Image (cartoon, rainbow, N blue to C red; front, top):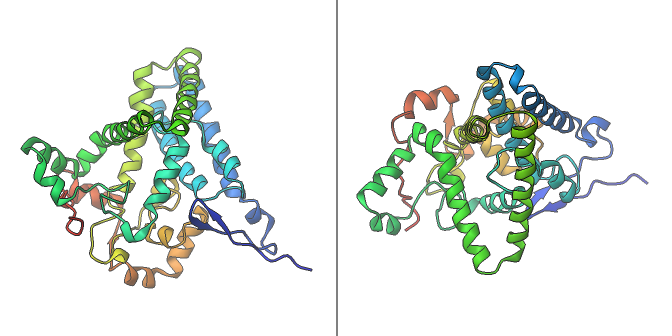
Length: 318
């Protein structure tokens, strides 16, 4: 008797299993395995040969691979390339970006996928907005900082530090309250970071500031370019998620996550299917998200490099 595919859950977000009639490469997610070997192999090669390469080549490659690894971690938490969350976690664990443990990222991001709360600062942990009540309590310099932070230049230059400090503050508070699970995660994370930095600094000879700012910080900035316009405040939750028709290099770096409205609708869809899915349903998706379309990442630079994209205050979350 032919086995039917089974639906499966993954951390509160629906995922799926390929039918047994699918080609073998699709059932085993061969493109994602190839991506894993390319990312880790590339990172090992760049770090190992760092001293033999010109810095202007090694550092951008390192930043790109670190950002690409973050994109893969996003795939892993949505159930790829295996059915096992534990195996996916092991594959995504190495902390190339230094600042964020994979289990914490997974937990935070899956909360973000509660679409009815998208962008609301009280409920969406990835929101860039503040409530009107919070805004009224802020000093003039703090308000100015948030306004600058909503420019693309502010997001790219300040964003990695803001993200890290905000997360660390919340995590330390949870640990102080007695969350032993988080404490174990962070102890293992910093142990892994120590091993990674031993490899990069002692074995490979990469100065720590070069790795910290040239690989990790710059890699996070590349990811924040993607997230800068992924969501907007809108009364209708369906209109809050964007489509960015990025060029091929950006689509590869972000693993199709630029088609963000389709990803939120079908978070289990593997990265290599998103472009075809978007092209086949473009008209419906644009109608669904209220026409929130950006014609490329270059457009973001032209329009918002030094101009805030929106007010920092969320208009629908008091």
